[in-house]
Amino acid sequence: MPGLPRKTAFQRFIAPLRRTKWVAYCKAPFAGPEQVLRYLSRYTHRVAISNRRLVAADSEAIAFRWKDYRLNGANRWNTMRLHPHEFIRRFLLHVLPKGFHRIRHYGLFASTNRAQSIATARALLDVVPPAADPQQPPDVAPHAARVLPYPCPCCGARMIVIETFARGCQPSWRPTLIRIDTS
Image (cartoon, rainbow, N blue to C red; front, side):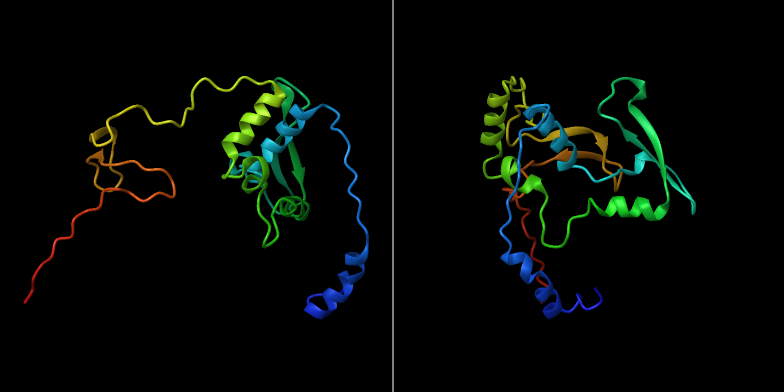
């Protein structure tokens, strides 16, 4: 409708929808909870399509690779060609509107209770927890300087790690300010 960009026209348009009693119909997944988690996990931390999956693009069609999760083996990956308008339409179905949040910020993957929720999900699915957390840093003295094998990207010299800290935390080491008296 042409007048919907105006706030009052849009509110009049959706007013009957707000009075409707909505009933969400939910049924058990056909393949069980494992399949539901497998399906959702493909969409929590990734973009709709990565650049490496794009094969070719011109004014006639965009070709990209897609994975058929129902198959195993070499035939799992296929190539699809779509008109650019259809490709953009399908891609934009995966873009969240302003104000919406990805599911990784809520529910099972909420940062406030992520570890407990994942442990509960593993227990319910009867899955053995991983042996060791691969993201855990090795046991090193907290104040020991470490020399890393790769060079500094700016000057090429060896980099020495002074401190590592978790995301969102402040470093405990601060450089001392050198005051120069110019009077």
